[in-house]
Image 1 (cartoon, rainbow, N blue to C red):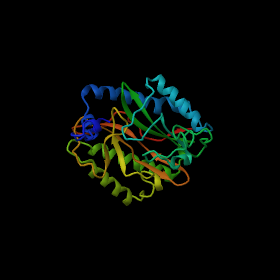
Image 2 (cartoon, rainbow, N blue to C red):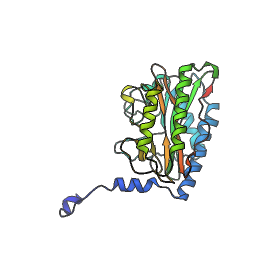
Image 3 (tube, one colour):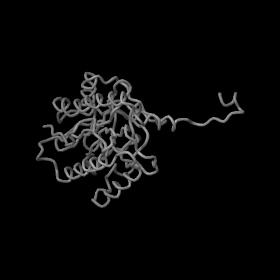
Image 4 (cartoon, rainbow, N blue to C red):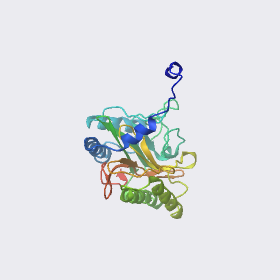
Length: 288
C-alpha cells in the first residue's frame, strides 16, 4: 500500500543493515546477556537434572523445564527474526526424537507436541534408560536471549557407549576450537569451512550437524534481541568478527537409531577469543 501511494520512490529492505547493527553489543547489553547466561546454565545444568528421570515423557520434562526457567526469571517469549520461523520453549528430544524430521532450521530434530505444533515435547515419547536426551532451550531476560543445549544420559556414566562418548567429545572439541578462534578480524565462513573439513577427516561427516534432511549448513549463529541473529557461522558470511559480538555455537552429532548428542553455548567475543556466558561445563549429565 505504501509503495502504491509513493510510486515515484523505490523501497528496499533494511533488515540486513539492522541485523548487522544489532550484532555488535553495548556493554549494557552484554551485562544483561551475561546474567541471562548464568541463569540459563543454572537451570539446565544444576537444577533440572535433580527433577527429571528416565521414564518421564518429553512433555513432562518440558513442563518441568518451563517451571525452572520461569522461577529463574525467563520472561516467557522468544523471538526469531527469520521470516516464518517460530519457537516455543525449545526442543525436548529423547532418544531417536533427536533425529526426527523437523521443519525447524537447526540440527536437532523433535517430535514436538503434534504435527500442527512441532514445538516442545511429545507426550507419547518416553525417555528410556540407555538413551540420550537433548534439551535445546533458549532463555530470555529483558528482551535478550542466550541459547544453550544440554545433553543428558539415562543411566550411569559408565553405561555411555563409546560411540556416544566419542561423538559428544568431538562436538566439545569443535566448540572449544571455534571459541578460541572467534576473535576480532576472523571470518566466520573460514571457521565453518575448517570445522566441516575436520568432521570429515575425523570420521563424523555423516551425522555432524544433523542426519539426512535434518543436516544444516552452519555451526552457530549470532544472538541477542532475536535467537537467530546475524551472522550465521556458515559459508558466505565474510564480514570480519568484531569485539562485542555474541554467538551461539552449536556443534551437534546425530547417531542413527539412538539420537543426538553435542553442545550449544553462548559466547561473547573478546580480544583474545570468545568467552562462554552460559556456563563452563559441557559434559553429558547422567541421570539414573
